Image 1 (tube, rainbow, N blue to C red):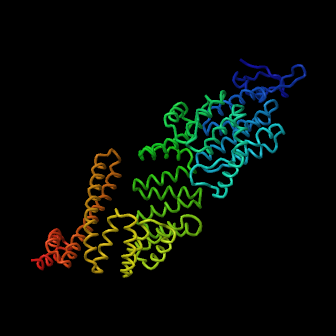
Image 2 (image 1 turned 90 degrees about the vertical axis):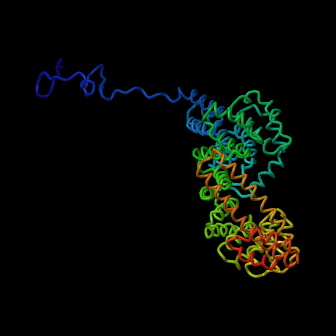
Image 3 (image 1 turned 30 degrees about the vertical axis):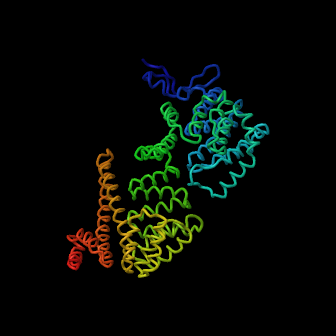
Length: 534
C-alpha cells in the first residue's frame, strides 16, 4: 500500500511500510493543531492520586514491625511529605518511624545510624501541634539504654540517660500509659520504657499489654513483648516464620541458644544476623566469644577486630582479642592489643596488666613480666595473679617470694593442680620436706582427677556430631593437657619419694620411687634412690 505525499519536487507516490508510519514524524494539519506521531506519550501519572494508597501501605509496614519494614516505611513517609493532602500524616509517620528505628538499634546493640537526630530535625520544622505531641516521646526514647557493653557512647552518656529516666519515671510512665494506644510509637515506648527501667522481678508484660487494645495484635508490639527481659523463644520463632523480613530476631534466638549451651546454633544464627548487618558490635563480639569457647582463636581475633572497627575504644573487645591472641601463641600481637587497652587509661587495667605479664613471661621477658604482674596484684584479687607471680619469681630465682605467691594462690583456689605442683617443687627446693610431701600427694590426686575429667571430655567429643576438624583439634588439645599432667605427676612422684627419703619414711619413699623407675626423664635418678632405700 502506498501513501500519497506532496513534496517540494512535485507529486509522486512514495511507498512507506505500515510499521514505519508509526515511527515517522508526519505533520498533519487538523483543526489548527500540529501533531507528531513519535512524540505521542501517555499523560504522567498524578502522584496525588496514589498518595493515600502509598501512605496506607507505609502504615502496614509499621505494623509489620521488622527493622527493614520500618526503614522502608520511613523512606516512603519522607517521599510523601511534599504531597498536599498527606503531607501532615507523612511527616508524623516519618518522625515516629525514625524514633522507632533509633530505639530498635539500641535494643539490638547495632551501630547508631543517626535516626533519632533525623527525627529531631524533622520535628523542629513541624507544626506546633505535632511538636507538642511527639517531643516528649523523643525524650523518652533518648533515655533508653543500648543493649550490651559494645556501645558507641561513653558510660557517662549511658549514666545520664539512666538518671533522666529515673528522674522523670513517674511523669513519663503516666504519659505513656495515658496515650499508649494512640499510635505505634507510643505503644512501643510504653513497653520499651517499662522493660528497661522496671526491675526484672517486677516485669508484667501481660499487664502492660492490656491498654494496647489497638496495637497489641501487631507484629511490632509482639516483637517488643517477646524481647522484654528474658527472650520468649517460641514467640520469636513464630514471628520469624510468619515474616522472614524479621532478620533481627536471629540475634535474640542466638543469645537464647548460647544460654542453653547450643554454641553451634548460636554461631549459625549470629552469622545470619551478621550477614544482614555487618556493623553490629553486639553480634560480632558475641561471635568472637563463641569462637573462643570453641577454641577457634584466629576466628575470634577476626571478629574482635570487626567489633573494634565500629567501636574502637571497646575495652572488652581489646581484652578479648588479647586473650585470643595469647591462646593462639601470638604473643607479640597480644602485647600490641594490650598496650592499646592500657593507653585508654580507664577500663580493665588490672586485667590488661595480668595478660601483659603472661605474654611477656611466654616471651622470656621476666623482668618486664614481674613489673606488670605486681601492678596487676594491686588491682585484681584472684588466684591467677599470684600464681603467675610465683612462676615469674621462681624464674628470677626469688624462691621465698615464689613460695609466698604460690601459697597465696592456693589459698584462693585449692583446686588448681598446677599451683599445687609449683608450690611442692618450691618447698622441696627449700628442704621443707614434710609440707612438700603433703602438698604433692594432694597434687597427685588432683592431677589424676583432672585426667579423668579430660578423658571424659574426649569421649564426649568422639561421640559428637560436630565438624571433624573441630573435634580433632579439641581432642588434640586435651591430649596435650593430659600429657602435661602426666609429666607433672611423674615429677611429683619423684619429689614425694625424695621428701619421704629425707623424712626417713623409706617405705613411703620406695612406693613413689618405683612409679617413676622406668620414666625416660627421671628413671635413672629414681633407680639410684631405690638403691639407697635397700
